[in-house]
Amino acid sequence: MVEKNEAKLIYVCDDDKNISELIKMYLENDGFEVKTFDTGEKLLSAVRTKLPNLITLDIMLPGINGFDALEKIRDKNDVPVILVSAKDNEVDKVRGFNEGSDDYIVKPFMPLELVARVKNVLRRFEKAGTKVERKVPEALDFSNVHIETSTMQVFINKKPVSFTNIEYKFLVYMFERQKEAVTKKDILADVWGYEEDDNRVIDDLLKRLRKKLDENKAKLSIETIWGVGYRLSDGAKKN
Amino acid sequence: MVEKNEAKLIYVCDDDKNISELIKMYLENDGFEVKTFDTGEKLLSAVRTKLPNLITLDIMLPGINGFDALEKIRDKNDVPVILVSAKDNEVDKVRGFNEGSDDYIVKPFMPLELVARVKNVLRRFEKAGTKVERKVPEALDFSNVHIETSTMQVFINKKPVSFTNIEYKFLVYMFERQKEAVTKKDILADVWGYEEDDNRVIDDLLKRLRKKLDENKAKLSIETIWGVGYRLSDGAKKN
DNA sequence: TATTTTTACCACAAATCTACCACATACATT
DNA sequence: AATGTATGTGGTAGATTTGTGGTAAAAATA
Image (spheres, rainbow over the protein chains, first blue to last red):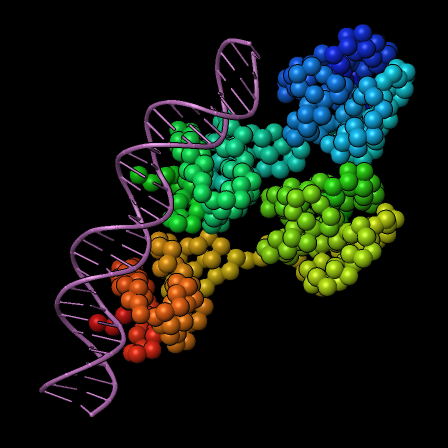
């Protein structure tokens, strides 16, 4: 079930321009649309802007390395990635697969081998029904606030409002629990990963979060349960 | 008796992406809708957002393990779970622990065997008339006072009334014992954690609690059993 | 690398809770 | 009724918890 109207988009990331151009040539010859990047940063930036159908990623890169780039990509997206490494090193292989790469190829390789692997991975993805899309297409709702977990977007009164990473994480955490009472200790453990609870980071976050919810006329409030924790509640903040 | 309108949703949790994708493929081939997760945390998050018809859960997972995840899931939901274990010797643990899981399967297994077990468990669930649903939050009732333990909220005549930590704790303690007589010593030990009983804190608490119940027209009173302790009682406080 | 954004930390203020004291009242026993 | 003990209650001080503005550190981004 290959789409014929639109060419599949592939991002190729390698600091060696000769290599990336070579790969590009071969892939384009097979009908793919290809964009090349010489650093992980540029790749990440492009991924944020538009998600490709597949990425080939060199491990040795100036600046952010391939593993870290892979992790960041996989953190938020479900897109097949083929790692490219300079050495045939078992450690790298194991690590690469654990981090979630879908295939692995060692330099020097024949361009046609890479093309074959690209096609193979794409086929596997299609067969498994894994569409290239943002993860977990579910939504969370509470009052007039709507969270699209697939795109990590929060809407208040249908209007998108931007939240920072932790703000978002905390909000999702509370939304998943709706009106439940949640202890500060649990929040620290689950949202921050802290074990000790001699910490004021939650108060700090809440300060910012409440302000933002307020400014955007969210009809909900994060109630304080004195000495315990917090709970989502209907209705705007009381004054 | 397969529903044709809507595919049954199955969550597959395994840290090995190859395995979860394999399972996914086979299950989808049988008409199920499948979502995969590589950590227990992600699974739990998804379960909170949307409850599936069945879950297959690997025991060995990074972060929270399968047993703990199972416990958390079962704590609040009625949903069939099939455990997957890597080693045969873990099966003993499964058996010992069993109560929670509806079935288990040992790796390596044939995909079709898992599919068969999935269908079997689903059939059993349907036959037993058990619906996949969230467990109703626990509530305590006495006269016109209603306590939601999940949200830590107290309602008097359907209206939320706020209680402090100890007030709440004490109220729950009494509600759990309904009209039983409870000694001061027990209260001190169970609510405060004190061993000695040369203490007037209870009287102090009761002063505040009775006032609050009174002000909010609760049709119950905390009767004093002279020289012994207290007991919940129907009807408003006598004057 | 430089710049911007995000997050954490600090210190002080405000809110809230809780225990204690003192005295009043109720109860049981004699 | 008198007495001693237990309980009720108002007031209050101290402790704890939370809110908040300012700022530094860290992280993300350009």
